[in-house]
Amino acid sequence: MQEKTQISQRDPATCLSGPDPFFEEKKNAFLAAIYDNNSSDAESIYDLILSQARKEGTNLSETNEKYLRQVQVAFKKFKTFLLSHSLSNCSERMQDKYLELQTLIQRKVKDQSRQVEHVEYKTWEKNLNLEPWQMDLLFTTAVTFQMTSGCSNYCRRCNEWALPKIRSHFSHDALKSILKKLLNRGNSDLSLYGASDPLDWEQSPFDLRDVLSGLDSQWEFSLLTKIPRGKQNLLKALIKKKISLSVSITDNNRSRVETLETEMNQSITKQHNSKDLLIPAGLDEDFISVKPSITDSYGTEILPDGAWIIIPTFTSALHPFGHKKLPITRETSFFPVKKLGRQALLVDYFKPLEVMGRGKKIFYLQKLLDVQVESILLDNGSEQLTPPGMRSLKEYFSIFDEAPRLQRKKMTRAVINRLKKKFVGKGSYKTLTNQKRLLYKTKIRAHLDFCNKNLVQESRLCAASFFLEAVMAYLENHQVKGRIIGFLIKQEAVDLRKKYKRQAEQEKTSSLFLAHHADTWEIFRFYANSLVMGCHGNTISKFIAGYPSKYDPVADRFVPAPKTG
Image (cartoon, rainbow, N blue to C red; front, top):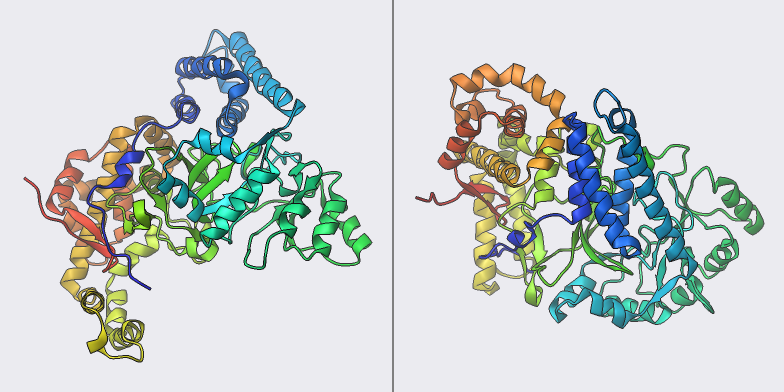
């Protein structure tokens, strides 16, 4: 397989630096005002949310309605503060606004569920209004194909904040068209669900068995259902046709599943088979803590009212979905290389992303996406945040310690043998192309360099500089989100300030990072948290200027970048 080594000359990440969608932005501003104990600002922002919701009425997109529901959940969580007479003289008026927004949301549910729409492929494609190469990459990188908008189950703890009641389906012809386009691109491994239950899909006289029965053996889709009421016979039919599926267990459907197993005299594959989900979500979101990521894939999501890029992130007030949804428009200049399951866990979320651009050219971004910086700032190093197989930033910083360096040195022969097997195999070095030879030698050199004590120290400084520069740039452009992050990491910031404040004032930043037995991770967290709290900006700016860095995807490490000015 050809190595993807090219770095983009014009960084496409800059195309995603625009503002968040209105309701996501205002949801964050509303929370920031609450965290700041500013009830007046919270009410003003809520007024803007309510005003826009009135204008959009029943034209709200699925994702925007989810953001409104998150606002309402936050309101209920902090209701005592928002309605306190000591903080606001308008508690009754604020409650009335909450009830009005709740009524608007409920009206949307009623209006949309009276007559379920079936979205045709051409309508969906026209609404997306993408260029042919973008449509091609959308299908190539899809990880989720959500056939229905809305869900008949509406589970209280839904990770995806699914909307109640069925709103729309892709038409049967649209399903066939999209599935064909996916398969034509070799994309047969994806989830046929999202914020919906796949068994909800129907268009008389068709149901899900008609869609899946027509798929050949190349498909490796995953299907997860709660078994909507009235769909027991459909589930039985799918199992008899040996359609691979799992049932997500809740208290509401547990007895239904047990009854079906008895009737069929066989067990059904289950997920979440416990009274409590591992990751609280939906109405259980507390908006004051950080939890593991819910999402385990990089790629795109197709649903009846549009398409999105999906990037995993920690689950928090910033991203209650457990991922960031980036809208796909004609301005979208890249798509993440598709990664699922274990592949996705192996992605170091704190490194520039591997993406695919026009002509399916694969390259690495030069900068981090905003969502990656947010994850860096929210990653406090807790083992509870890091699922098995995923490397945390804390673990990454440990590779610069002396013991790992010496271990790498001992493994040099094994590493070179592995690279030889990969590049040369049973052939001869002489038969390699010039490009393969160069890459082979570069990989060997990269390993040898990372065994050199001085170069390891240099790489440690470059990594710290790269991350801190990304944090500084992010905070300059995202003050509201910075306030939310500051609230979520407040105690950690206080503890680290007590520990490192005096040293930071007396020593150079580089000296702190290179000190004997220095805890590189803690020092980085101290400086990153300081930026969030508005401290040590000048000191950190000097450090970044002294150690400009970039990511080298061939060496897979951070290296010095040419100094400017």
